[in-house]
Length: 60
Image 1: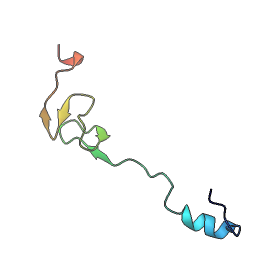
Image 2 (image 1 turned 90 degrees about the vertical axis):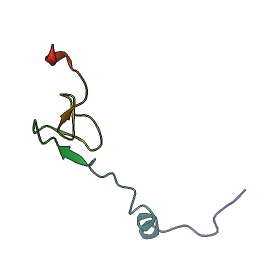
Image 3 (image 1 turned 120 degrees about the horizontal axis):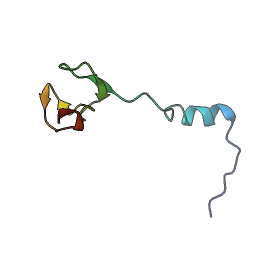
């Protein structure tokens, strides 16, 4: 079983965790409706890259 020989300082621990923070998800704006949605995903109104690809309840 591995046991550390010396205690890792708070500074070195912080350096190791420097890239672990969460970033905001990449968002895109739909050109036809102006809605904000996740990139490479269909918008809530069923549009993807300016074209209607999914029929929604509001279409009926």
